[in-house]
Structure formats: C-alpha cells, structure tokens
Image (cartoon, rainbow, N blue to C red; front, side, top):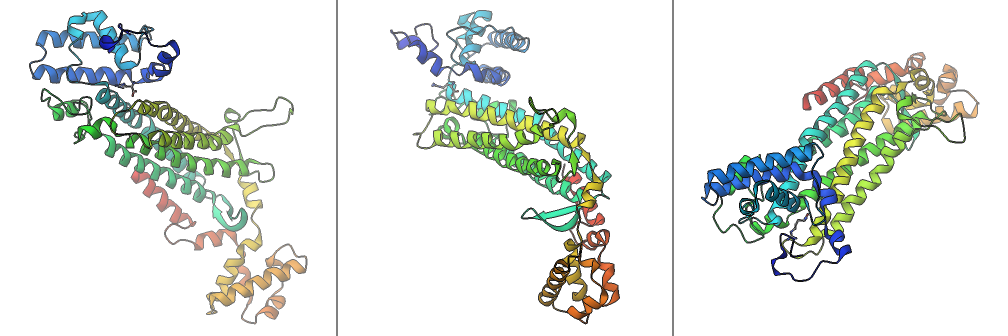
Length: 459
Ligand code: ARG
C-alpha cells in the first residue's frame, strides 16, 4: 500500500483479492487516450496558474505523448500495483520524466473529476466516431434498397395475420424511420452530456481557481457542469446512453424478428446471405438465421446493462462513491454490443436477397376486403355499413369454398347488396390497392419516395 499513489496514511497491505476486486484497469484502460488528453489540458491549466513552469509543462506533455505511443502500439507495461488507467498513466509518467515533475500533475485534481471527465470524452468519441456514422450507413443502405425494390408488393400484417398489401419498401422505410429517430435521439443525448466536470476537485471545487471554462473548451466540451458536487457524482449520462442503447436494440430486435419470420420456408420472402447464416452440426440441410437471432437476443443483454447499473446507482449518497466504478463495464458492454449490432444489421440488409415472387404469391384476395368496403363508400354508403357488407362477401366466398372474394359472380354480389355493380371487380388489384394509399406516410410509390427523401434529408 505504501507504494500506491494514495499510500501515505497506510501501514498495512491490501488484501490480494481486494486489490483485484477494486482495480478497474482491466476495463478502463480503454479510456487511455481521453485520460492522457485530459491530463495534457489540465496541466496547461496549472501552468497558466503559475503552478508549473513552461519547461515542466513541456516535459509533461512529452511524457504523455510517449505514453500514448506505448498504448497505441500495445507496448504499455502494466504494473501489478496499477489500480486504474489514471494511476497507471501517472505512474508511467513518473518513470519517463521523473517523479519530481510528474508528482505535480495531480495538483488540485482528484480521480473523482478525472475519471468522469475521461468517461465523458470516451463516450463522445464513441458516439461521433462510431455510433453516428454507423447508424447513418445502416439507414443509407435501407434507403437505397427501398428505392431499388419499390415495385415489390408483400402482405402487411397486423396480429401477424395478413392484413393489407404494402410495398416491401414501405417495410424498409418503417425501420429506416425508427433508426433515424435513434440517430436524432443520440445526438440529443450527446448534446446534454458533453459538459466538463474537470476542475471540480474531489467534490468541493478547485483550491487554486483553475479556469474551468478553458479546460472545457480545450477538451471539446460545450461548457462546464456548474456544481462541483454534481460534476463528480452525476452519472445520468451513462444511464441515458444505455437507455438509448436499449431502445435502439428494441427496434433492432423487432426488425430482426420480422426478418426471421420472412426467412422461414413457410414465408420465403427473403434469403439471408451465407455471410450472415450458420449451419447445424447435426442436420446437413440447415441454414439458420443466427445473425438475426443474435440481434434479437442481444437486446436483452443491453437492457440488463441499463437496469443493472440503475440498481447500483440507486441510493448512493452524494457525491463520489466506489459503486460508481460499476458504470464502465455496463456502459462499455452496451456500447460495444450496440455498435456490433448496427454493423451486423447493415451487413444483413445489404446482402439478403428478396424473393419478390414469393411475396406476391402470399397476397390473397381477402386482403382487399377493405378496398371492397371502400368501393361502396365511394357510392355513398356509410363505412360501418360497407364494412359489414364486405364481411358478408368474405364469408359467402368462404362458405362456397371459393378461393377468394373475386370468384363470386356479380349476381351473387347483387344478392348481398344491390348497389354492387360490375365495376366492383376492378377492386381486385393489389397494385391499385397500394397506389390508392398515397396520403402522407402511406404505401403508394409516391408516398414512400417522399418518406425516403425526408429520411435522407435528416441524415
Ligand atoms: N477507478 C475509479 C472509477 O472508475 C476512479 C477513482 C475513484 N476515486 C476514488 N477516490 N476512489 O470510478
């Protein structure tokens, strides 16, 4: 313990398992870049206060660059006593430039403001460099596919029962809409959490009057967190990011479930590419949609990350408590799972093949029963009445063992309702059915193309 950065008041050793239990380096090393950047800017702030000379500052910055190179090249050697990324980097800095200078970098700073500064930077970089561009690409791929395959019709479902014909592109556009909302939501979360806690000290504030606005600006934050107690203890951004991830994974899961169903032999609407399928160790004929099942399954795991950390956070007294170290494993797991899921979904959607003939074969005439009701509405009959009449037609065709309502004769129609005329048979046209739904948001070609260009504009 006497070897540790905080070892001054200790005489006894830490229990071996306690050291491992306490250490976060095995996972928080991922924030090394943010940690070094934070220290660079922080020491510049100290130098402005006259707490470091120009010469000391340049030695410190040189050392920090060296450490970054070591991490980048996977040559950083961890010491058994290193507790977390912050103590490891500071220990290494002492070895490179001497402990007399390195010993000054932590003046007025605490790991309490340091660790959460690093985490906010790490999250911002992950959002900007990975999640946002990856999501954009996913939506782009979906838009391109929807434009290309706009002529394919398929059954639309409610309660998983055939409901009304829609365009395949309408289905694509629906999930592209969810994912675009996810993208916008993520930008809003980022806007809220990109504030600097640095310079808050352990909890009470900075004793040398460091310029926190300067630190914030240099580190790319949009302002500072205005209360030092909040600065060190606020983990709402971690929760918000994981909620964001959970909601996104919910969308991905439903998207995947649709595709699992569409890929069964019974439906046969789509075929997954080999790149995103796996086989069975026993049944030679099998091609399983594992990519889709994992997209669906991993939504549970991300939900678990969120709820697990919320449980840890509940009831912690203000301000920093070690419980908070639990933020990172949940969050990192969530971010990695979400990132990989976006990439897999993009791969799946860009490589699957659409069996548009199978889709068309799945359309049945009873799916036009609503259109038949609308036919009479156009003749002035109230919809409640036409709904009933059209239902009778469906039941009559069914009772006569006909393949569909289009097989009833005009005489049989007239017996049900004399207002039916021969032009009723024009109703039995799937293409016409979807094209009629051209109001905003509908499944007509023009309406879908509008949706797609609106989405494109949001990216
Ligand atoms: N490794 C810790 C974390 O990730 C940072 C250090 C906490 N500060 C302290 N006084 N124990 O939360």
